[in-house]
Image 1 (cartoon, protein in one colour):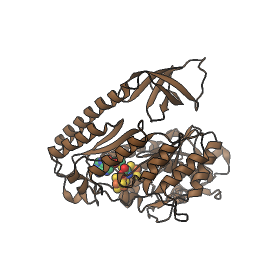
Image 2 (image 1 turned 120 degrees about the vertical axis):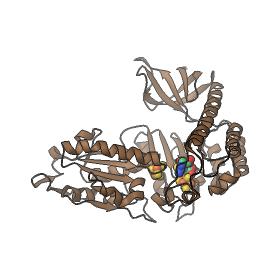
Image 3 (image 1 turned 90 degrees about the horizontal axis):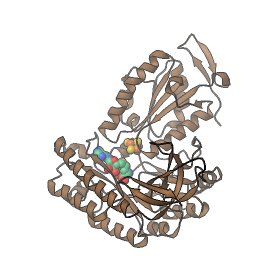
Image 4 (image 1 turned 180 degrees about the vertical axis):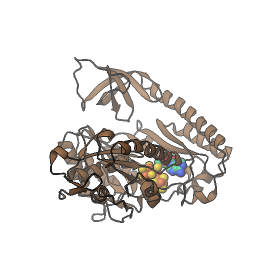
Length: 460
Ligand code: SAH
Ligand code: SF4
Ligand code: F3S
């Protein structure tokens, strides 16, 4: 436990606010953007701040400290944050003592330029979250702060993420990325690849199970290159150890790089019932010329060979991918190669993006020669085709019985609940007072209807 700080508040007539005094317990509100790793990082920051006496709130108007945990992956991710900052001026007008901070990948990328915004008191990059309490304390006395050093060793292994009750937990097993895909800012915003200790991850899985969690997702930008420094254990071995340590817990992981998707990993998945049969395997493009310009380090042939291996060992394994349209120099033929690859693999789902040039990356220097309307048209073509394929796949599930982990009321209708199949498909089913299940149960649902993104069923 960190020591509880005394926070000197010089902005409002020099009163001393002692966070030991629970009647004045300061409140932290964090908003999270970007990927699941950011979601887990927010829990780490909340863990650090909670140790220093902060309570969490989900109401920004009640907060003493507002932090935005940001993403820099595409230009529109950053635009969203600038808009949100403009909006936060309103909170600062109402509460002059409010501390506002920017965390995450955009903090790392834009650094002190973010402090030029009058509103922002602190800027903290992904490897410096231990400094947040100190920088917040300084901000109370009007001192603005920045901490954006990247580390080769920081994994926050000893920090207990602040998790509110739930059934699914995120567990970061590694940080950073060394792949340097030419379009991507992550190697710059998150720094070098480093893995958490093997034993501490397995222990965390056990402890989460004991706390009542039903599902964990092991996280990293490229989990396949996980390597425990001490024992030399790889990701397949970690997955195997977790599956054995918590046999009644569902285990997922994301994200994989096709280059490092080993037979050993696919075999480990196939061997354990509690490892969910779902793989997110980003391909980005179906054209070898573009893959090479992207520095994806493998041709489409290697990708097909990995998919064949997955389907051979796990015929019902669901697959999803990421696609970028309009990468520099992408021709209609390259685009058609991507369409063709998606028809051949038949993904259950895909995250599809328009190329967004990022400063400092290699692709930045390639120019951005594909006109926006062409990017958009190609994007729409792959989205439409993908939706049709996903609908077809889901409709083949009609009549089947799926094991669903119950998550709670559906977003659209409180009379219906939702959960997920082992293959990660959102499934909706009816709920009433007599329903014999609670959140966290695994129930059998007969699928009766299916759209491209959702299954609908009834209890059996
Ligand atoms: N580490 C993961 C991806 C993390 S970023 C992996 O390699 O699989 C998530 C996705 O965002 C990427 O897979 C890519 O499709 C997309 N992306 C990254 N940089 C982008 C950019 N500059 N423009 C558009 N999409 C991008
Ligand atoms: Fe970015 Fe490539 Fe690393 Fe994924 S593997 S985070 S796309 S550099
Ligand atoms: Fe975004 Fe950083 Fe994740 S750039 S996608 S929040 S690693």
